[in-house]
Image (cartoon, rainbow, N blue to C red; front, side, top):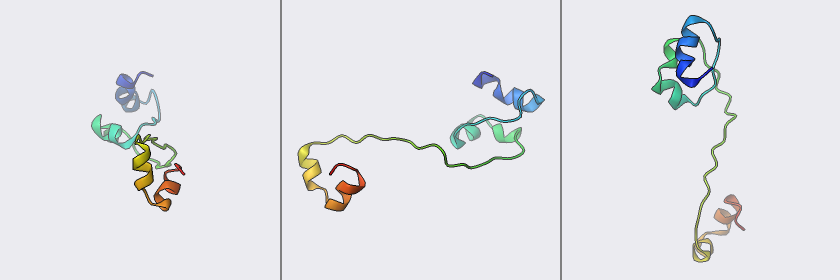
Length: 70
């Protein structure tokens, strides 16, 4: 079902669930037509970092390990 039709689909029972990030649930008010929500924590956002060798050198050893840069 198209995202634009999801609210109506939930409301009419044409679909019985949806999977979207919480900001989307709030933005389009899915909570008005949903009876429950399951927080699975299964999505991970990857945020690449860019920097110079000098930036890397200025980081502590712990920070380099945590960022998997060294």
